Amino acid sequence: MTAELAWWTTLGCAAVVAAVLGLVALLSLARGLVVVTVRGASMAPAFRDGDRVLVRRGPRPAVGQVVVAERPAGGGTWAGPPVRYAAGAAEVRGREWLIKRVAAVAGDPVPRDRVRSLAGVPEERVPAGRVVLLGDNRKVSFDSGDVGYFPADRVLGTVLRRSTS
Image (cartoon, rainbow, N blue to C red; front, side):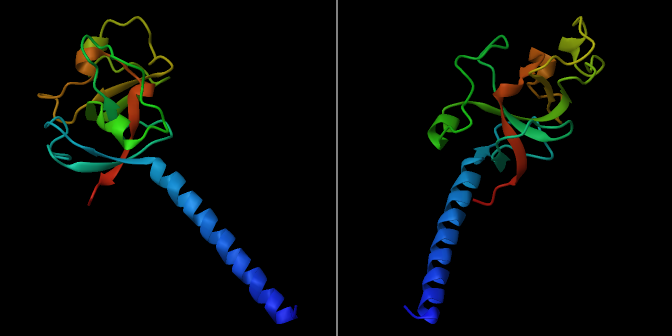
């Protein structure tokens, strides 16, 4: 084999490896993204009924970020286990979701003044594994004001933007 042919063979193999690695990275990234349709007016005017939002799964949200969380079935409880990180679209579609803004995360002071359901809790700080979620349109929002803390594992992810698809 000539040096030129060896060089082209090496280059071709490198291109194939790069393409495969790129495809794996793209699939991994896509698995961490999901599109959810907003239902209701609890986040108006920022988000409206029927808006589709792109949600990033993964890191825990920060105060001020908009998130999508699973709606409790009743009395602040959930019917089944949380959605797995690796869940497919069918499992995500099979749940009822809320879009809210994060008001407090674990370790933050309990926002008693803004969340009536937390006014009488004994703890001074939001407990580990819990978040406080509020809708921007408080008059119509079903949120922590109604059910108290949300389990952090019921947060699907952080809204990146409105989806164009």
